[in-house]
Amino acid sequence: FTFTHAITRKPSASIVAGLRAVDTGTPSLALMTQHHADYIAALKATGATVVELEALEDFPDSVFVEDTALCLPEGAVVMRPGAPSRLGEAARMAPHLQALYKHVLHIENPESFIEGGDILTTETEILVGRSARTNATGIAELAARVALWDYKVREVFTPPGVLHFKTDCSLLDAETILSTTRLAASGCFEGYRVIPVAEGEEPCANTIRFNDAVIMPQGFPRTRDTLLAQGYKVVEIGNTECAKLDGGMSCLSLRF
Ligand code: CIR
Image (cartoon, rainbow, N blue to C red; front, side, top):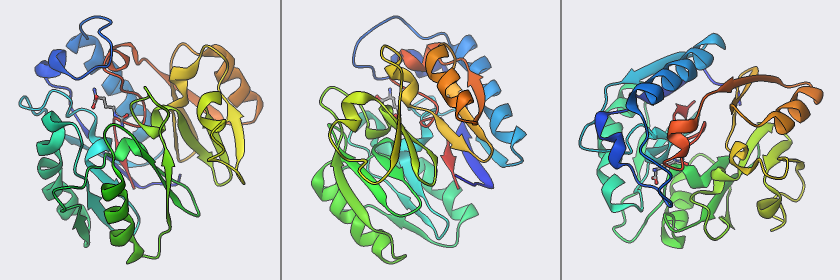
């Protein structure tokens, strides 16, 4: 959770066509752009360098850069998103990773599908949730790639009906995970300390620990107060527009 860099991409006007499980209304580009600027300011306030890429009109979901790659200290791995409309986003991210990293690997097997939102990197392992976007072949290929840098990949399961593994959890520090009760109940966080999100506040499980700050979506006061009481420094960012597209705090950046 200590980072020197983040990569973000501006939301494009095509965001109104972004993927969503349930239609709860058209996102406003103006408000999303404002929230996005607040998010970047929060990342920068921790002392990190933030790369701000231009919008990609051809890819409505491209503001959610996290899904295109896995960034590790040793190098980056370019993903193969399982959503057909998002597959091309990964290739558009690759040159930016190459500019910042010496080692950039790729998920290449045409049978492999994997999105960054399904990957939770802790201090000791990489958990990857099988989901509608991430399959066993993709997870196995990632495991083979990162074995080069001695990482252990553990396959877990994203709950049915949940977009990504990290829709439901976040790393708060070396031993602590913020999780929905439905995900923690699967037993996948044995050995970690789990802080459950308050009942009815499930959407705030997608939060990020970025240097000294826990950056969480606005509007979840009970979980926020729990985190404050545990001594975390909390920064709240508006997320109403990204939430209409099942996106949250982790999706909006690649962090390394
Ligand atoms: C999608 O369905 O792919 C986008 N509308 C949301 C992606 C959110 N990304 C993430 O959780 N890492």
